[in-house]
Amino acid sequence: MDPVDGFPVGAPSAQAATLTWHSYAHFAAGTVTFTSLVAACYVLGRHFSRAGNRRYAIASRVAGTALLIGNGWAMGGGRAGTLTLAVGAITAMLWTSVVAYRFRRGL
Image 1: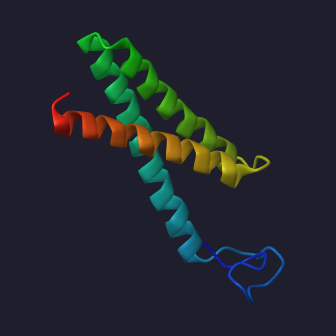
Image 2 (image 1 turned 90 degrees about the horizontal axis):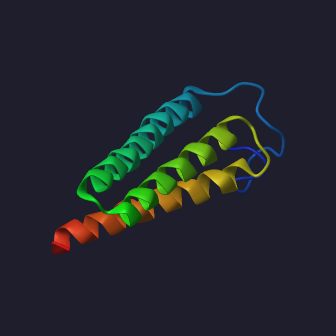
């Protein structure tokens, strides 16, 4: 992202009139990454549904939906968009970490 609103220190306090290619690359990478993470959560939800583990299936779908909503809200310019995106991303990443740990331990 381009430096704006005083971040980092010394950056202009106003929004930039145009975005640089760095910002577009950032948006593109985020779109691919978050779409993949949402898909992974839903795939895990389907896996756990078929395996009969309803609790994990629901948790997987909730994590994917949290990221989907958080990302959509942030990209749509919603109020506190960065916060909603962070909550969704942390939820989905934490959940996939729990599942990875579970599979690694053979639980």
